[in-house]
Figure 1: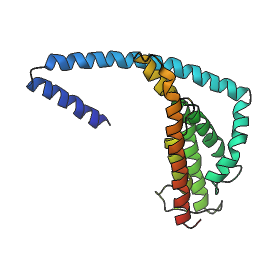
Figure 2 (figure 1 turned 60 degrees about the vertical axis):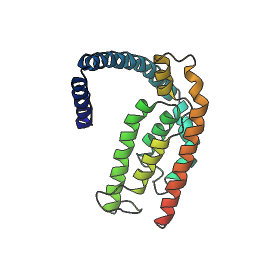
Figure 3 (figure 1 turned 90 degrees about the horizontal axis):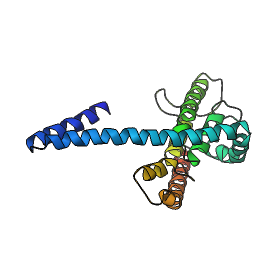
Length: 204
């Protein structure tokens, strides 16, 4: 990504020089930097609010209730994941955070879940736990399923998009909620169907 962004900046400078509009390129860079700072501050405030609400919900036991509610879904998506495996809680937290539109808040749980799934694969290779074993360096079924569900996640409240629309002066920033739910619902259903088809081809 660093090389990509450096290349794009270099192309802009070269193009501005060749067209005699180098000052315009410099002005655009400065104004974009200012907008980036303003947007970051806006996003920090919104994310701080929602992450704080998530912590309150966690302390109040609401997150645990939600995890219990989605436990049948987790068993359906990850049939070979042991019931009491440490990766299960961060997977549930990641899904809940994504459904609430808290993509940034979901990232730490997602990383922890992937770490737990990696240890699960190591335990299978060592014979400590049952389940399908993949060659070293190849993602397990659970890893692939989790990544696909994470990317396609259903979102009830697209916080990031609402924040972007608010930052750029939308008269109704929350107007994307309905279309967002519809789009992410379709993508999530497609992701689940794809995962199950691939599981079937692998002989489950």
